[in-house]
Image 1 (cartoon, each protein chain N blue to C red):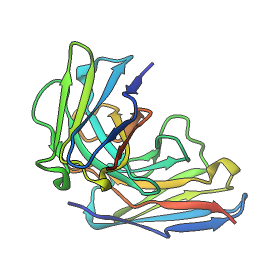
Image 2 (image 1 turned 180 degrees about the horizontal axis):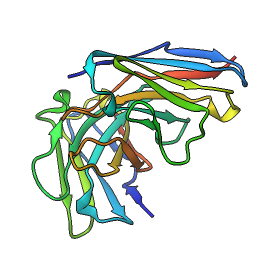
Image 3 (image 1 turned 180 degrees about the vertical axis):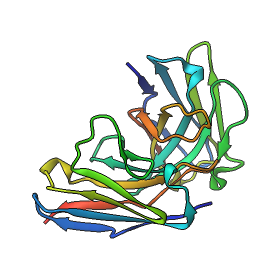
Length: 122
Length: 108
């Protein structure tokens, strides 16, 4: 069955970068889009962006433009998100999520990783 | 970017009652691209409703979605103790997906 397993918790200082991984299994990696969603403590869900593991440029929410990078490694079925110039308000749980595969690319999120807590503190 | 506003922020109800949660979009959206998710503490969100009114696999028929244009509703009938959670709507019909801020359904 489908599994998305994320890397472990990270603690970073302001101004640093963090790279979180999401390893996919149980399906054809290049056939489904992967999204990144974050959730600050006690707050709601915030969509960060989307990447197509089969190729093409990722799409990011405007507030993350210039600070976020999303990449994939098809040899290992891993998706990465990297956020730079970290601030205290980047402290959040970061989730990867897979959509269920639609021909037009517009699908809801069916499978989620377990989340990776990123803490930014001096 | 479409902004989704959910109401109320908190909804106190008792088991057995019916919950009505609202999601309003800043501009008209195609209902085929409106989803609802449930999130319990310490867990990732779970897809409940897609296409505004279709239940995802394994979701009880106590959960129903409706709406079109800018106004969408999630209705939960005969509330069970496990239904008390936070609910989010999401628009996924554009390159920039967005979530509402969430409604917390809590036990009265």
